[in-house]
Length: 450
Image (cartoon, rainbow, N blue to C red; front, side, top):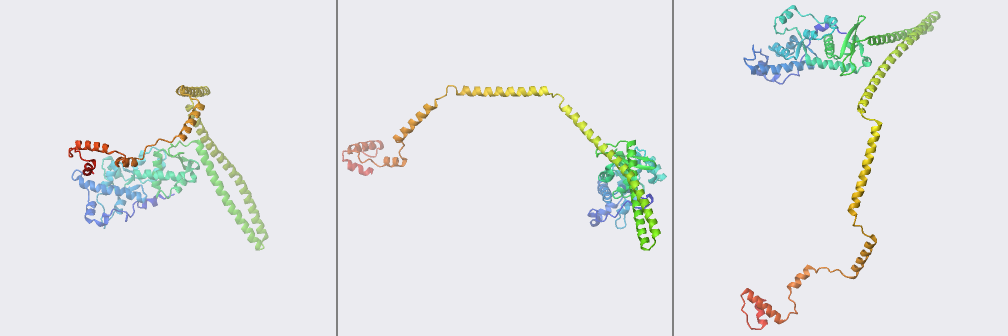
């Protein structure tokens, strides 16, 4: 467990070297402008105002995320962002703007927003605000004091989710109720200080994922069963199981201590025997035997407690299975609401009737198409044989080769008579008009045309 005094002395900020924008070291003119104070109002020069705010607001939140902190103070930020001996003069205005936008929240306001009975015992670890801070808030002064603690809302939600996953993946999740001291030890690596740890619990309480109860002077925390479930109030069963778990741990520690004591008695007896001190050796052995009997008795009690816890865990598992079965039966009933065996049989009969009807229709249609077109297959075979025989006897009447036809048409038939040639020449002379009909011999008339 952390010490509040030691935590109060530790600064929340850190050295951001190497994690700053490039202009931090390269652009003197730009950085001089960014380190200057804001104007009294944004209306004076909205461009300069938005430029500064766009630089510092994301940088403040990203710096806190890298440092792993959810709590901010103006003083720590001024120390973290020092540059060449200068501090940014507008950080207070930046924090005021983040408060206005809801990205930051005063730590005291956040605590007051959580309606939980366990805040009363947690208030002691939070330092009381100076009276002037309270008066300034009552009078409406929005200035942020250098020592006032602010909470980064989104970072706190991320840290709460981290702690919840850490618990779910730890052996402590075997039962939803866990001691606050054990939980704080588990979260020591995620929460850098006790105040952050309590803020995380408050956030989980706000999200209804944990509830805290004080039992016999010890604070216990109960978690929700699932990531999307809401936590239920701590009941007598939770308290009883928690007490059994504490008894199991106490008995285990006692058995371990007695086992070490019995081993020491055994070594003392061995040394006394070697030194020749028989009576001392016998006394050590008697002490060892008494210790071993106590260990046996504690083992019996421990087995009983562990058996009860095993039965409780088994019953919880059985209850979960029973609930799952019950939900499944309910869903099955809804899905089978209008389905009965008689309806199913009737539906099957209807389907069979429709299939039979479809078969009959198909057969009828097939018969109607072929009706009147049926032929005797034997007659068809005989006719085909006759055609094949005729084909083998008579050669096929194929057309002449087109090339042969061309040449026979172009070459004059030598069997044509002279009279036919003279008549053909007469026709050509009359049609073209370049030759005059004459009574000369055909040979002399053929020469010019050839």
